Length: 261
Image 1 (tube, rainbow, N blue to C red):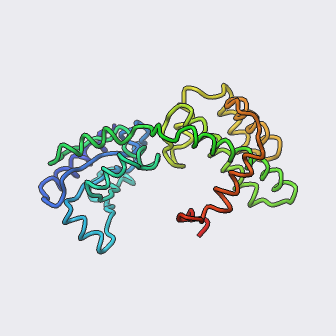
Image 2: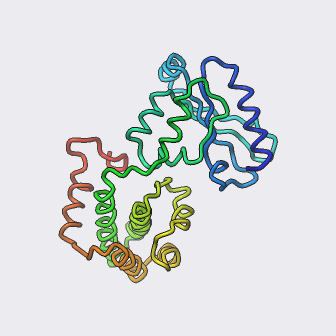
Image 3: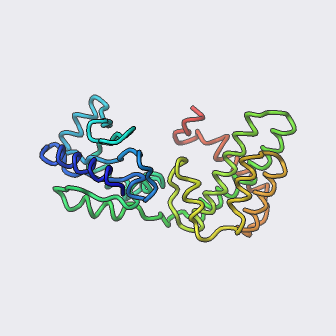
């Protein structure tokens, strides 16, 4: 952690610790993961009392962004305001990106020991449903390879770029799940993939070749690499059923993903 980030954290702590509306300050983001640049922002989470959180819910004031706590070019602090129930929910059933946000997180002050217990319990890979998720990612790879072929055949650049990005996403998520590594969302996805210990020897090279030169051949090379790594073969019937359930029928009995609203 750079000294300028330490100074900003100290100022944040001095500002919020005396405020009885907040029970803890949690530092997260790139600076706790060792990925920060010298001018990176300071990410933090404020745990509010139930009363303060209820007030903020009424006005949807869940963020805190300021340049007042930093003394370096382009520096700022970026905070989210939650309650203790939020931490309990993440520990119990949070998404992988939600869990990943707490990797290496630490408190600078806390008035409730449960906070520290929870931020240790949160960034743990969820074992339940792992094989089901891996099967879903695998089927996505098979389908998206077909979509790349269709995109090239029709000269559809939008479909090509969308399919290639998703092909890398789901192939990469298959690798992360194999390693029981939390998916950190898109910004840090490639960084975490690079560090995954168990993956095809040429994984990053084949992946970058696909991203830099998206076509039928590079997509097929990426797909074959995942098939060989997974060892599950190429069951296009199962992949087709997956497509119906998770893409075409994903609005039945649940809220559809935002891109399908």
